[in-house]
Structures are given as structure tokens and as C-alpha cells.
Length: 451
Image (cartoon, rainbow, N blue to C red; front, side):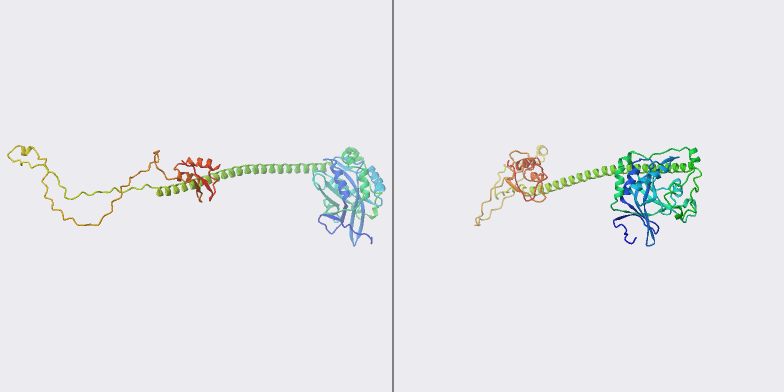
């Protein structure tokens, strides 16, 4: 073994302990997976062939091939190899795997994971009695697998099989396994199940079970021979193991249904929450749009009111003062002639009132005229005009032909400012070829309609 080197291209599965190191070739993994999947929910068994060696006081097991379990028989729902199965394996080993030996076997159990069936564990201890012979449990549906081997320090019967925590998959040219897979193509694996022989309980009870592989292995090299000798303890009641297996299957099925119910419930709750959040989000978006629209309208009305106020102050009508003409002094007033005053003795004095006004005092003499500087003639009176927007003949301020938009302006404010009419906004739009009254740009010059 001096020239032997471990494979370099490897993949580690699980954790590697201090015990047996297992190396399985990639073609073997592919073959066993296809072979187990081809049976659907039925179980299958196969032989594992390879070699063992010790390197630096460390025991290694190399699995270089696999042979499917032809001529297997079935009793009470459990598969087992027959003598014809062993004969077939010997022929295949001689043709395709010369120099190798049977180092274990594979048992597939769909939907059971890597659970170790106690019936198969006892069968392994009776038929594969060497320390390095392993049991490879495969679940093709869940794509799980695990190695088991005999436990040399087991204290109770239930601890006689121990799980190997990890192994390696190595990638090399495996011509022998490749040829065997070509001869026994995948169609045969998937369509042709192993030949099964159903045995009745009476046939099984009357049959003397002996190790099938005694001719292949040397019992003297089996250090476990004293503990697990041929014809060792067999199951007390196979129905007990079948019942346990069915109970485990029912329990797992119930757990699966509970998990599915929980997943469906969570999925429904998530869907309801999604719909509620979506509706609330749409409502918030619409409310925000309404708020933005109201704010824009408020800004427009504020701007229009400010511009209208400035326009009214700038174009307010001017009221002229009416000149007051003073009366000239010393104007003679013609008074009627005096009438005799009535005496108290006359009846008219008490009944008739004198309509004439009392006499005025004599007017003083006017002063002598003096020379005064020449005063300018007063300006003609200004005619007062009151602006009436409803009067057709009212005079309005001239409207410019163009207007440069200022920051904060709107077409509504411009229409009210220049025309006093909000509807002129549409005339401005049409004149300037605009579509949206809100899409105006500060600094742009627009044309104004002329009345």
C-alpha cells in the first residue's frame, strides 16, 4: 500500500469521526439513487462491493460498485436476499468487479428518512457479520441517506447498530461501474422491480435461516462471531416490527398533515394581510393626491387674490374735488316794503303772522380796492367717473399683448388680474396652444387675448 494515495477530488457528507472512514464513488451514488427512485413507494435492496484497507492505523472502506438485489424475497413486508441473489452477485462481481468483495448492502425506505428499522438491523447482524460491513439506508423521496454498522461496545440489543456520522464521495473514472450501468440500463432499474417471493408465515417458521454469505466470508476473521454467531437471535414476532413501522408511518403522516394545515393557515393569513395592506396603501395614495390637489388650488386662489388686490389698488378710480365758489361781498338784496305793524287791539294781530323777514342791518362800506398780484385761473373741474364692470361702455385699463409669467403665477390669477374673469383662462390656453392650465413655466412669455 505504499503507492496508494487517497482520492483528491472528494466531497464530504456530514461530519467525520475517528472510526471507520467510508469513501463511496460517485457512479455508485447515482446508481443507488436511480435504482431506489425507480420503485416509487416500494422498498428495494442491493449489494455494496468494494475493498477495505488500513492506512496509518486508520481503517478505510472504499465502495466501488453496487449490484441490485435480484431474486430478493419478501416476507411480512420486509425484503431479504436469497441464495439466488448471492449467486447473481457472485456472477456480476466476477464479470464487472474482479478483486472486490461484498462490503455491505443498501436498503431503501421511501418517506421514512434515515430511520433504522429494527427488523432490518437484526437481519444485518445475522447476515453481514464482519466489522467493516455496513448498511446504507436511503430515502429516495426525501433524498436522505445514512450509513450504519455493528457497534462493538453495545450493551443492549437495541444499541447493536450505530450510525456513522459522515462519509466521503469521491470522483474518479469507474469503468467497471459504468459498464455495469450500461448493461443494466436505467430503464430496467425503473421498470423492472426485483423478483419477489412471498413466503407464508408457516414457510418462514419451518425454514432454517443460515447466513447466506458464509461461502464469501471467512468466519474466523469475524471478531464479532462470539456475540453474533450464525443462527443468532431472530425477531420474536415479525408482526411486532410491522406494527411499529405502521405506527411510525401513521405518526409521520399525521405530523405531515399538521404541518400542511399550519402552512395553509399561515399562507391564508399572509394573503389577507397583503390585501388589507394593499387597500390601505391605495387609500393613502388617493388621500395624498387629494391633499396635494387642494393645496395647489389654495395656492392658486391665494395668488389670484393677491394679484387682484394689487390690480384694484393700482387701477382704483380718482375722485376730483368739486371747486367751491365763494359769494361776492356787498350784494344788495331787494327787500319788500314795510307794512304797518299790527296793534294788539286789532284782531289780525293775533291771527295773522307777518310773513316778511326781519329787516337786515345796514351793510358796511366795502374797503377801497387795492392792487393784488395776478392769480392764475383755476383748472377746469375734473369729471368724476365711477367704474362699473357690468356696464358695456365702461373704460378698463389697457391689456398688454404679452405677459411674462412670474414665480407663483397661475392662469387663473392672470385671467382675474387682466380680465376680471376666470373663464378667460381657457382663451389664454387656446391662444398659446396649451393643454393643461397647471403646466406653466415661470419666465415664459405668453400672449393675452385682446378685447
